[in-house]
Length: 65
Image (cartoon, rainbow, N blue to C red; front, side, top):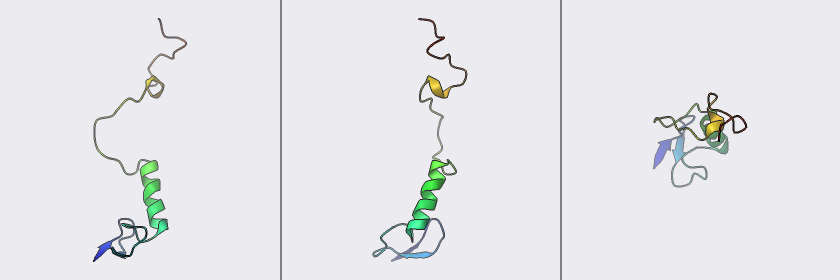
């Protein structure tokens, strides 16, 4: 069975592809880079990780106890 590489669209022999679903390590790394630079993202509500991520949040030094 063959399927297109998600990055370059070349046909990939699904049973024998070592970088499946990609055709090569290069295409795998290109895809990883797209996720790391947020060109790819899963849609959803934004999530605040901590106060350091919010520029309007008071810093721990200036926060009142």
